[in-house]
Image (cartoon, rainbow, N blue to C red):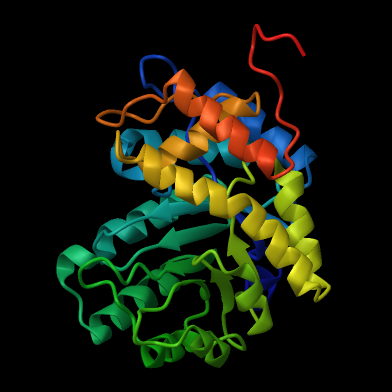
Length: 316
C-alpha cells in the first residue's frame, strides 16, 4: 500500500489496547478476538480509528517473543479489514525490527509503531539508516514512536524531514522535547500524519494534526469518537472540555495508584473492569487493583459522565 493510501487509514483515534490475561497471567486470545469485534461494532473503524496492539500499554515488554504472532493474528482476523491494526515493535536493532515487521505484515497488520533502536546508541544518521531500511523491507505503514525521554531516542525535526522520502514511514506519534516547540509539528504535517501523544489533541489539530492517542477508548469508544468529531469540525473548545473532563481526574488518580504499584496498563485494565469488560491484571511485579481502587476509578468515570454499571452484586 502506498503512502497516500496509508495516510487515509492510519489516523483518528489511535487506540492503545491492553492485552487480556487470564488468572494465571496467560494470554486470553479468545477475549481479545471478542473485544476487537466489539470495538469495531462500537465505531472504531477505518478512517476514524486504529487498533494498536503490543505497545507498552499492551505489556509488550512483558510479553514472550512467541506471544507476539498469535496476538497480531487474532486481532487482524477479528478486525477483518474493518479497522487498521497497528503492532508495536520497540527498541530493537534493524535486523530484528525488520524480522518482526515482516511477521506482523504477513499476519495482517496494516501498520507498525516503531521506537528508535536505543540499545544501539544511535546517532541521527543511524536513525535515518534504520528507518530507511525498515521502509524498504515492508509494504505497510510505520508510525514512529518519538520516545525522546528514553536514552538515545531523541529525533530532531530536521531528521524527521529527511525521512519524507521513505515511502512507508508516514506517521509520527508526536511528543516534543522541552526545548523543541510543540508547534514545530506544523513543519511536518504535509509529509506525515501527526498523532498527538501529549494529552493535547486540540493543540494537535489546531496545528494541522491528524489524530491522537486515546486515553480510555478501549472501554467506552463513543466518548473519544465524539471528541474526534468535534476536532474534525473545528469545535475545539467543546473537544477540550470533553477531553479534560475525562483525563484530568484519571491522570491524578493514576499518580495516586502508582504509589502502591506501577505499570502503565494497570489503570486502563481497571477502567475496562469497571465498565464491565474485564481483561485481567497486568503481569507481575505490578499488583492487581484492589476493590477500593476500582471504586475510585468508578467514581472518576461517573464524574466524567460515563454510563458506569453497578458492580456485580450491587442493586441497580
